[in-house]
Image 1 (cartoon, one colour):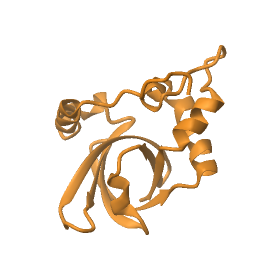
Image 2: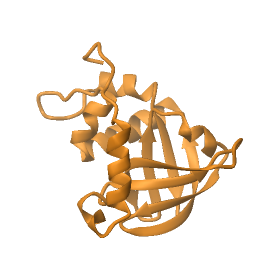
Image 3: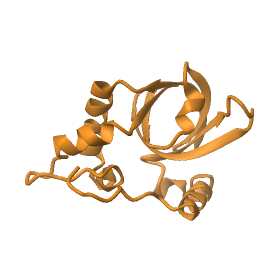
Length: 148
């Protein structure tokens, strides 16, 4: 990565606010690329909801995380998404293959340049994500693909 400090994380109070916005009629200001992902903990049986940025291609929704909640989705897991003001169900699959994560994260950050800072990814002179930063980010990023 081009920086020596860790990429910034989103403070928990921001997620609290975002959850309320996405559950309200005001969701349109954020729901184009931010959703709520609800899943059940494998050990606890407790329901968890994560705020995640996403890209959608038809019935496939892809999101990214450097947190550990994805562990609950290993082997395929049922999930609910609050996406675009609608709740839909799907099956989540975890992708850890570095080549796949690198390719997918590159596409995501090309489409959503403002998220680069959360992955510690700099931009080159042409405004594209720096490949060496993407490779470093892929080491700590997990892709979650959800088939609706």
